[in-house]
Image (tube, rainbow, N blue to C red; front, side, top):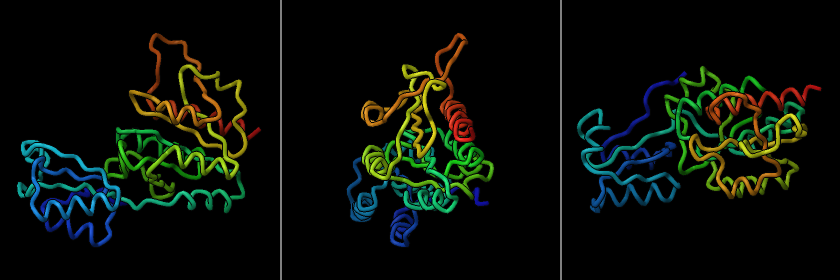
Length: 246
């Protein structure tokens, strides 16, 4: 299992990483730098929808492991991404209705890794994450998944809402986790289903929530009003498992 940190520093190494077809999740570029190599890197990043962060030199210095970042640092995926169709094909191969987990802006690599682990254990056919504003398949995610990343396909898409609409046309309906939703025990969570889990702080975005068929809340009796995103995913995922097993 590849847990090594996938970091690339320096202008030529980053350019070559793009041109060799490596999957780069995000790049950090020195703000205000407009020379030729940097512009080439930015063009390549935009062409591949790679997230671009413009930062000060002090931030790059803090991030750099070599001290020779030359104004750019790239973070490459530790694992290759699947396609959404791969997830649907996995469900078909298992002769099961699709069970997909969609993550609307999960930023913490430990949460993402834990969700991948849960997805594998509860029999979900795959996970879909957004290209922007979310954690990718880093080494930390791989480690937190406890090996599940080797068996559970993760697809990255440009637009979560568009993907939901496309999957609805294939007969999949969607439920999102929301504290104001219907008690999960009162919902029918069987059949072809997509479970949507939102950002650790903001929850599911307004447009994504509007695009879902149902919102589900988890009954809670404690003194605080929310669960960790990966824990909430686990609770709802296993309610889906329970209902699909009846």
